Image: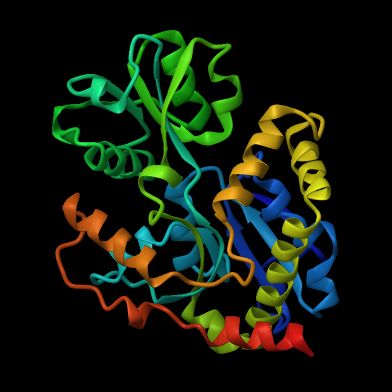
Amino acid sequence: MAVTVGGCAGGDSANSDPLTWRVGVMPCASDCGFLHMAQEKDFYAKHGVNVEFVTLQSASQIYPALAAGEVDAIEQSPGGLLIAAQGSGLRAHIIGSSMQGMPYAIYAREQYDSVADLEGRSMAISSPTGAPALVAASMLQESGVDWSSVEPLNAGGNADRYRAVVAGTADAASSPADYVPQAEADGVNVLALSPDVIPQYPRYMIIANDKSLDRKPEAATRYLAGLIEGLRYAYDHQDEAMRVAAEGMDTTPDDPLVTYMNDLIVERQLVDRDAGIDMEMLQYQEDVLEEADQLTADIDLEGLVDTSYQEAALRMLEE
């Protein structure tokens, strides 16, 4: 694990500090302007909490880190929590969100003009049960294509899946919308965007370990207050949001890779200004997992959500 610290450095001893909050995150790219704005503007320090970010390189690492208590919370798709709710040892609650909407796209080789053309074709994914496969299956099925007719190919990470289409080793790929601006130059067609086809599919919610919530409720609230102020600031200062994203990508703020994602987030409202929790999105996630046979028991969705910390954070911001 690579640790990116938004405050003082520390390990387990810092994790026991009542005002230190460790968050497991995935690497961000063109969305960094929103996801990193609270660190950029020192909003966490403003609200009296020391936030440490643990950057993990794959989704397969992030839930185990939460369960082991290596982090207090994670910024991740809620699907893993729903699966864990069937009986694993993980005890956690969703307390907010950072980027609710899913900014994904279906990319295809230039001979395919529509999602309907992908029936019987190959699709680059990461794993049969991972988010790229679930998003692709949902988008294809919403477009009238039988997912069982598609040949899934395990092609690795986000960039690897896109490159598989560019190289012609896969007919199509499910990957973030980061690559939309360069697709035409690469001879790749963008067949669909997830915000258009499955706007109710969730991306990142804040999932906190129950032990951490019990031991450090004030840290959880103050963390959310800083996060919310950062998200609001990014909406209201888009030039700064694009600058932060550009710095994270080692490019310039006017790079189409930066401006496209910023516009997509803003126009489709993929980020909730108040870091809220959309129950309809959670219900949709449950339906997707049931369709994929990853859920075998009924889930109490309401029982997995605790809005009290977000509500306390909003009150803190009003003071």
